[in-house]
Image (tube, rainbow, N blue to C red; front, side):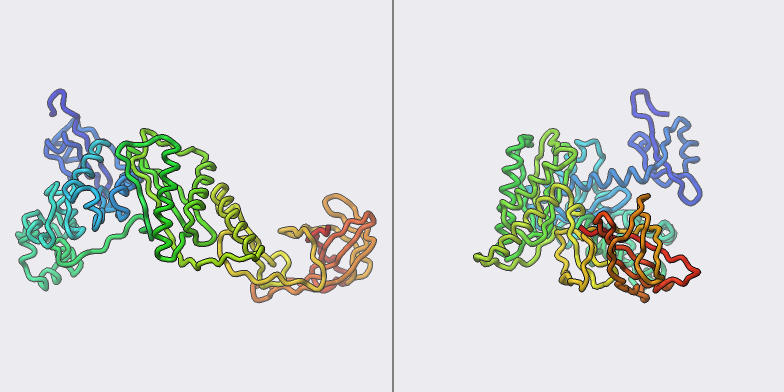
Length: 485
């Protein structure tokens, strides 16, 4: 039973090995002896009035990613350690916050203020940091001191599989130091080489690589505010300043950015990320600022500062070599630059997938002669080849069937019905025979005979007949494929 006024004991359960087991407990349940891994039946026998909630893995993952977003303010290298942990690689970043002790205090204080129970530690390897955070909260290990710092921790701190933990306990090995004292060959033979690597990582002998949840930027510039800002003009001025700083770094390396991301960190922990892409490498701060202004103006939900932004970061996610441009008097080159900038602005406002251009394809099939790709993509395209006969101005994506009557089996139709309208043919030219690409289909495709038709009212059509010609007992299939101007 719990005392009046205390929080009720609460546990989270999930089905593990065909049994309901505890996956998390609150402080009240922990004080009564409940720990994760205990069977729910045993927990209810100990505490009959226990509050039980079912685990929600999707919600837990979403919350962990939200916490990771908030932690991006300390380092862009944040990795997930599910179900309840994060790894922050703070190499070269601790001095920005006044040292490692000030950094770890800032992380714990910020998350505690948001209502989370936090434990953290700093060590040279990820396994050592995780073990110390769970059993020695607040520990900061000096370089090379991981072996001594983890020696007194229980073997469960390694996070090995339950059979391995059970085998270690049966062998009388209760601490990491006792396990590390045994021979490596003996441990590998009994528990496997992966466990030996885990043990060496906890001791600082090797490091297990961690994968950041977001790709690391090529270049980055950020501005931290002593007090959160909400004024739109200040936010815009900050973006321009960061664009100038980022452009200076890019120029010093003769590079330009193709993908740029602006991250706005709110004081309450929410993070908003806005990305713009360009068709060619850019480093002009005015262009960068203009693209972000277009992107911000097009947002369905305007940028909400809430209680204010305490950090704004600008990242060059993808940088490429930028060839210096020579200023000349060629009007065509200047027009290409202006068109490229216009495409970038329209893509920032409407989306890159909505601004497309046609690219010629190496095929003689009319409907496959071109494809649409985002206009910002730098995709080499073959030159448009002029055909010997004119093509219609409007080409249908899918040919439409028509009813046609031809006097000569391999000649043009005399009249045809299309979209419920009867047309009488006044002039005809053809056929233009186009064979299908037999190597692209298992089933043979019929050859097409195309005709340029003009009806009695002067309207011009492009239609074709399937097959080389029709026998007297057969009815050929006719299709409308395009309209001439």
